[in-house]
Image 1: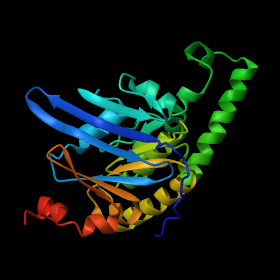
Image 2 (image 1 turned 180 degrees about the horizontal axis):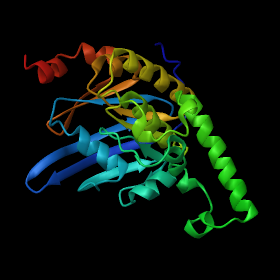
Image 3 (image 1 turned 30 degrees about the horizontal axis):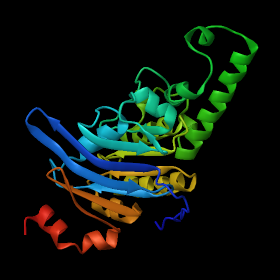
Image 4 (image 1 turned 180 degrees about the vertical axis):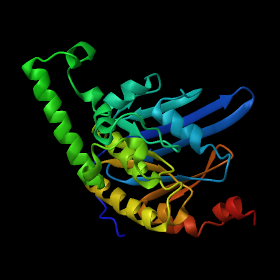
Length: 262
């Protein structure tokens, strides 16, 4: 599973985390966290339980706003933007617990992910104007292309709740890609998958990378994370413990101590 790395010559990183601080009541979740995410790369975000990974992930996704510091995406400050605004800007995500519309079909779930990039609103969706019908046909074609991309096109008309768990993971990724993101946030995508499914997931991430989508991966499967990531950011007790290549992180004594208690 050798990923073809897309080297970037961009002067500015796609995502820049600048001295971010976040507390919940008296609990300090993140303390002065700073790092960059280069365009066209995969960054693995790891750390022991309680390190602050989920908090940082939710800050980037717009669930929370930083108490201090800035999050810069595509050269714009996104601290105050709402979740739907971030999707429009080009940030999409998956969830640790699969979040699908179970009463909808597989293709309908993917089409829901397109709503921020379509022109017709609610009233347009219930009308039959020619341009709206044309847009709907195009949306369905693009949804089918994404289902083929993740290997689920044969099941487009099935209810999403009827899919095996591993396929639901793939469907959620397809839905996240439907908004045509520049940055894809993956929250433990291998959770609940067996070894074969995890290997297939790694191959899919490779294909997504080759489409030009930058990714941040929060994942407990260290084999997958080290294999697929260009850079690893290690958090411990809300602070940056180390940043480096997978090889550098694997040989870092401070990281080993944080994980193993040595």
